[in-house]
Image (tube, rainbow over all chains, first blue to last red; front, side, top):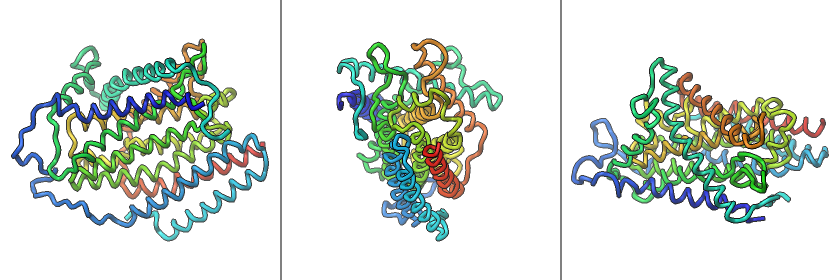
Length: 120
Length: 331
């Protein structure tokens, strides 16, 4: 029954209300802002801060992000099979899991050997 | 049925009221935890910790909250206004939404002592828990400061690396229980808590949980020695407080999931009405572990953190899942 999701909706609503209240509360209850100072500068120890949003970021990050997608989908695919494994009690289901995981283990060993997991 | 079906739902008003009660109870406990953590850390370092505001310093969180509310609304010059505000909001939202899944007891007198008990179960936790990743990434990126930017990128890479091991660590317990519903997983532990047959899974889950909650020794995203304060460098006032609150909520939920999957959830000696107390006691015990580890272990280096996640935890979790799968079928 979808009705049992109602508490989740309540929590989601509470989350939306509380989080927006926390983010906005200083604008209403806090001190008024003094502008025209150097206060708005980003944190830096004395020098002018250099920042650009088009920073190049190392390729390791994208590598990790791609691997994450691969392995997270593996886990999500495993979950439904895992739920029925005990009740099914069949070697076929077990073999399916083993083959699926083994294929991804090969992929993991491959990227490991190629050095994609070394954070540089 | 595998898709979103549950056995039981009360009248609509009971569903709403019980959600509000759980929310109020958790938010009554969470501020106390901030004080308890500081007092425990103090004791570990042979000092008192906060003890000036109220009896035993118990009113410290109220004082902290008042101070944070009194701060001015601040935005650094280079910030992207909307995303800068969305960062902390998303993190808190994710923390509150995941609270719905924790089971506090069985169905008693026609009322289920849990927020939701659905057949997608723990996937709800991963779906909403994963949202906090966007909060850190957006908040740090939108701050317009290089320290925030570095912290945000680090936290993103760290969160996604450890989430896999976390999910795989639970997979062993799911194989044994044959369900995703958290109450049924607790019932599956009638004979023996899963911490005994799934001890490796429990360890992997807790280590990955430390990384997920950005807690020491894996608090690299906010590593104050190198990145000032990481993604929260440019935040102040209650927006900064939101990150703190979310950290405690996240620890609470991770401890709750660990207690449910491995420590028998609400099970304990005594009459039925003690069930939520037992659950809370187990959660607080696991949170003490968070505090204890923070006082004991130094921060690891970043490349150590990444290689530990991919080269130790992930293979171990996979092995654990495979061995459990074989044993569940054979036995």
